[in-house]
Length: 182
Image (tube, rainbow, N blue to C red; front, side):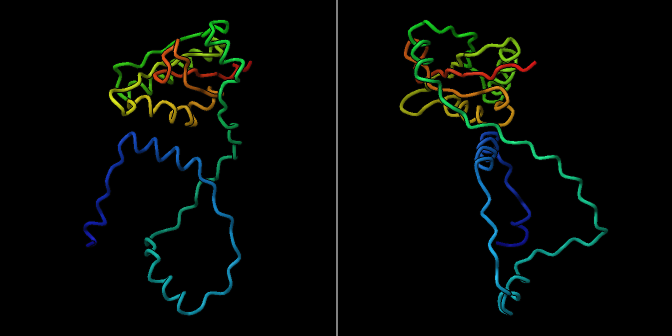
């Protein structure tokens, strides 16, 4: 590979960026290990691998923001709650149908819908994604569960699970919302 090839970088698609964000949030750093003094050969190799530092004045790095604790993991609906919803004894507070929307439209619509439902103190909502065509699940069917794990949704969502056959089965999700504070 020439130096010219290394300068061009492929731009990630929206789906790839969402996937990358999801993956990087789930990764825990390896613990630091104590190293012995490197030998001369290792130092020489390390010098070849290090990229050159840009010339210019050093800039002070901005102060780090205080660490906010990560929200607890997403949890599925309790067996009792799901049974009540499937049997019609537990109310679904709101519904959103994402059929016919692009990924970008669906992402925005889902975020707005969940914010509005959370503001109205809804506890359980139904998000209809569709099953997709053929044996392959639809794009929204694959993406919505990943989106619900992203930080912007985590402030609103406690957990989610596939809906019962009565409410769309594999083409829909029950989404349990956090309580609105204050």
